[in-house]
Image (cartoon, rainbow, N blue to C red; front, side, top):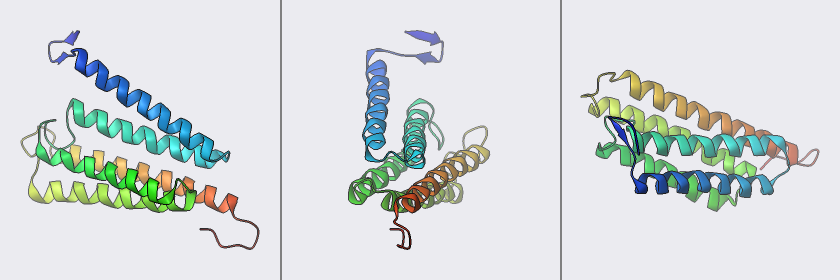
Length: 163
């Protein structure tokens, strides 16, 4: 299927898109069942949507240079931090807040490394693209962390320290 001359999807592209969308929806379904608190659900939705968008952008055009630039593989490591952290935290809000802060730090570190190393500098909007995209994603991870933290405080009994 061809949308424009530079956008041509084959069957594999549709399979990847379906896997990403169904995976994101399934992940949100699991997260939504973990807590009935609105801030937990919003935090999970934001984090899952951000992860989906990060993968989609990387597959489509790449964050650092083109989609073929090897430095874009660092974002797979960022998502691995999120997945491993979520498993270790067992999706509990306090642990998820810490995982999302770690992801924000990793996102900013990848952006800083790309700027310092000059990765993707052959692109026409370098370094603005790297600064803006990494900054926005780091901010989104922090917003999600804040909402998970709010869910932690809502769960804690009166007088108890939040986990």
